[in-house]
Image (spheres, each protein chain N blue to C red):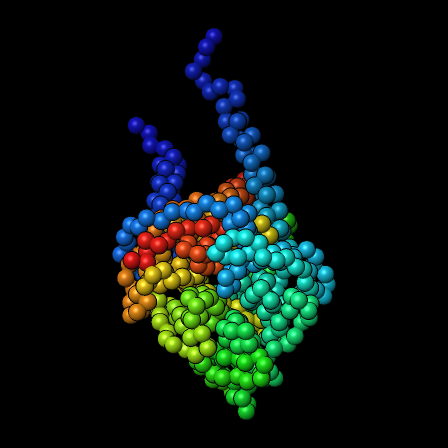
Length: 154
Length: 343
């Protein structure tokens, strides 16, 4: 007999999608941040020069800022690996700050090409902004999932 | 009707992003752009097999096309093969190979010699004897050079005179080693050759038999010199771009963003007009050529035309080639007829 009740698998597909996509987003973001972190670390001088060339900082400040960014990225990575919810919050905040920073550089006429490291180096502003917005959205999805899970666990 | 808030929020966010990306200013800095008045001219490409075979390593000096090819990259020296062609008749003149220090930059080439600068010292490689000879006297740090005569050179340099460092253009007599100041750009109490090589970065070019020119690629100034190397006049292009500013990381100088502008990539004289291939335009897929009166230095008009979507920032150098103009782009060398721009 046909019934108008909920199909047997209703809700299973979105849940499955979420189960597949959120870990994918999680590992992708870890890989991505590790990649840009390693690139900045291995070419630290060019990263510092890139900051210096903006003309916003003195040499000392540019150096300190480069260490701060590296420490921040490392901190986010560790947090993501061991404290997922805190890591997600930090990652979302960090990517939002990075995105606002490149917009500010653009507005001040200080953006030349991307200096984030690796294959991202040399990106035009519009592509950099698109990638950053994509990353912000992904980190927001991860954050949302972490909060939801945390609520269930609580 | 039930309203799905998530869908509407999604639609609003996507629409906002589309609007943002369509309207946001993605173009480079608009400061120091020229308010141009455009006029159409008949500009044609002149087909030539030799020109089509050349690549971006080509240098035009005096009446020569010099095609360089690096054949080995040794730790200490670079070996280059050079093919010289007559720029007016497009026939080969000579071929030779020579070694250069790895840090050397070739600045000028003639049928007899190659002038190059290595760590602020000026050298000549003589093709017949195969010998390298230092030309600059003690105290003259050379940044760029061109030949004005068999024994005379015009150098952009910094002269250390009694503890004062004068940056400018000097006429150098290579037989006597005497140096005469043609145009002083600045005077400092300490050596500034390295930063000034970036601030006044540019190229020498011969615009006619008796006139040499130096145009800065990050500053709006163009300097004209007589055949003897004396300053005859100077003009500023209509963009009015200021000198670039630099930042220093205790080892190297870099251009500071936000206050450095790519300005003039090449110049050429056609009839009574000076043609300027400027980077100070909207990012277009056209060549934009600004026409100035050679007599008054006033901006007259501009023209634009499309050639394979290549534009002025793609240009490396330009020279007269008979009645035509040879343009070295980053992606190839092309011969154009710009004669209509001379009127």
